[in-house]
Length: 489
Image (cartoon, rainbow, N blue to C red; front, side, top):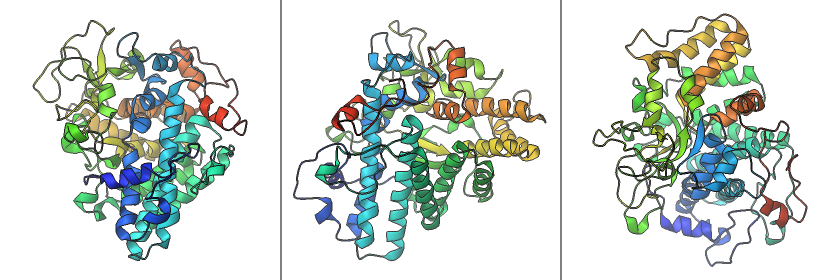
């Protein structure tokens, strides 16, 4: 959102129950005394969004659990920097790796904030339509977080209320089907109560919308192989007129295109003065930024050789996704210098931001979580699985047409009629279109080809183990056996 979340909201929620496995200090301002009026309801909802910018949510561990673990990226940075991320890259991790405990904490903290809002806002005497919308936003955000967690860890604890002190360490794992059921119901409730993107004022851009809820529900249906249900939602989004492809692919991830016509769900960020850095910013840009002059980032998340080889000849999306040494940065002012400490340095251009006030972690770049091209390609995939060849080709060629621009010698329209061959082509197109956007690992899992793909590029992937992450050992220990570990760990 363009409006900065008030510090009072953050202070309040830090004093309340954020992580269902953490014991929280007692404070005078709590969930029991806070929810009194409409302003409190808005602040409580805003606090859910604010957690998306935390280190535990979008910092280096998140990059490791999405891009680095996949075939899209390598660890990056220098050889000895971030050894825990090197373990992830090499599939040499166990349940003690901090990647997993960090993303677990960040996502359950966000779920806890959503639970508080969902359970307490209905009791506030306030405008009914706003109340319904805020609860819908909170349900969307809860569903989004549970969807991430269930894909990463499989069966997980399902928590929908604010836990009491004696419940923190007694949670058990719920079946994946139960998590899916909650996600589906939350998203259906959100669809019923949320407005379309065009109905929000400019100050509220970034809030959950009807289209975003439909998009995440379509993703859930794709995971469940409910292709007909997914295609209905993709068709509705495409026909809604709420979204369009930005004509120039290389402009999608610029500051000027934040909350643009292709954006379906993104978290706003603002670089603040150094003295208060972090309250409106995020570490997302910093950890992937060019290491050394001129960008002074950390240089993690190096686009892989395998990703580069995936692009078709002349595909401009490769250049728009990867920053190379010697390249003029998108601001047109500086050239990336060679860093002798890094082997074959290159960086994720989609996470690049220009110079800004404050320290490196005062990242001002919005975090794009769902964009229209993703839904178009999901629609193409679903249509192909249902044998609707013409619709599948129509949709997949939409992104190819945008990518080639005026150059008709590249990225020709696909004309494939064989279902299996078109499936392969759509998957390839999806990787080229969405590379380095933290989606690849989830796609490989959804397609059931993690072992095949990772083994092919030389990773020591162990089938029936590495498809899921281990539950954090800290949580296993704190539960005193209530939480069972995933197989193989």
